[in-house]
Image 1 (cartoon, one colour):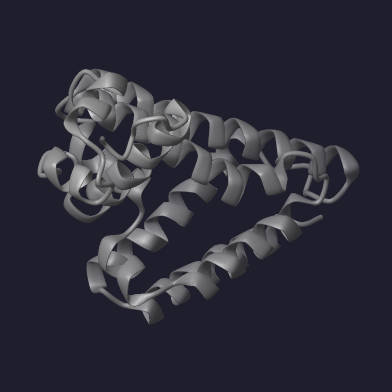
Image 2 (image 1 turned 30 degrees about the vertical axis):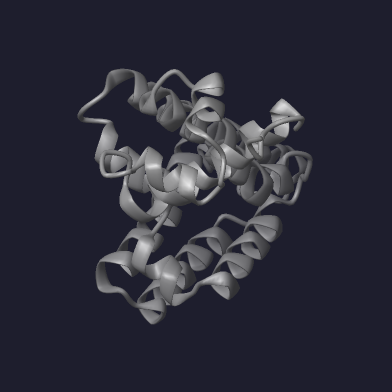
Length: 202
C-alpha cells in the first residue's frame, strides 16, 4: 500500500507542492527533478500525476500556491489594513534581516529567481510570476495611499511609483546579497531601503 493511500488528497497535494518548492528553490525550475521531489515525500508517481499532469503544471502551482502564499503572509498581510505602512514595512524588513542566513544569501529570493529564469522562456510562466508581483504592488500602493490619507505619508509621494520602487529595492537587496554571497552587503542595502522609507514620512 502506498503512503498516499487513505490520505486526504489536499494533504498529499500540499506535501507535493512543498517538496517541489524546495526542489525549484535549490535547483531552478529547468533543472528540477520530479524524481527528487518524490524521493523527498515518499509518495508515488501516481500520486503526483493524480494532481499534476506534468512538471510545468507543478511549477505553475508552486508559483500560485506556495510562493504567492509566502509573499502574502510575509509582506502583504502585515500591510493590508494599516494606515501606518512605513512603520509596518520597517518591521517587515527588520524581520527579513534577522532571518538572513548563509543559505538564503546563497539561494536568493525564489520569486525573483524564477522571474529571471523563466520569464524570457515561457509566457504563461511569466504571467503567473507577474501576477504575484502585481498583487504585491497593488497591496503596497493601497497601503501607502491609506497612510497618505491619514497624514502619515508625504502628500507629494506618488503611491504607485513608490510601491514599484520599494519592491525593486527589496528584491534588489536580496539579489545583491546573493550575487556577493554576503549577509553584510544585504544588510547594508536593506538599511538604505529603510532610509528611503523613513524619507516618505510626513
